[in-house]
Image: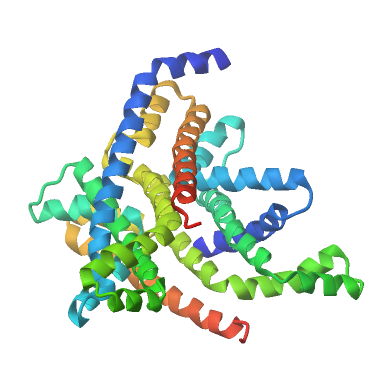
Length: 218
Length: 194
């Protein structure tokens, strides 16, 4: 059985690599897009006036209350009804990005509010404008603080990218299912998929730890 | 279903958490591997592995037990991390006090550490419970008839896409808020007075 398994693994290597590529592509674009949106929402959550704050709060709370799977299926099916035809890939990336943005905005708000008040007051005292204070004083400190949870979210997104296989994006999970459909080595190939995800997640975690150590205030 | 596996997962999480901080190295290594590996593997892969993969090895489960099994394993790893943080936060003197009045190690853990632990990690715990509740939606993949699966079915049968998905979303948001509210009440009830 073991020679058969390695033979099958060798045959399907191109498929698997293509799956890994799609998975990474989806995850990274979702993380980057989501972080950008999340920063905007997080800023309006912290500094906005009452109206924008209310909007941002509603957005974050609602998105955080919906499972990723429902979000993905909703984007894929509902948007096409109102004639916004996203491909499966686009719908997957968008929904993961939106999921990511809700988490990032909440983290950013926490990070910004945790910067001691004396810091902003000191910045005001030396005559920095609001934007200067934000850019040079609060943001760098907040970013350091949210880095660990941001890394966690990144791993979550990579794991969430398995769910886009359900709308037909050919990433690792769907590739695995296709391979299994051909050779029926169910357990082995799911184990392979698990191993690949583990390696991706683990390396993101390690890189995160490394960066954390690099940027820590001594 | 989610409740059942979350409860089981909490138990596993507790045991694993004590193994994580145990003095024996072998326990630490075993539990550490379990937590890191499971936390880095997507829930869906675990579910598919257990539902489709394990029958190859001679263990066959039907949909619901295999899903409960998967979610339990998954929950155990996450909750172990939460509990570990709580154990480390317990003051050392408390355990020593237990030793001083002659309790065994197990007694100290059951009667002293766990009650304190649960009260102090309650906020983090309820966050995790809510996300596990949401993760239960993945069960739709192996045709467990829960909310997501039913919505998909309704969508396909009636083509009322917008209605189906928005009501599923509303239901999820609503039940998340409800759970959050209930857990916050529990939190306030059991919080250690300052």
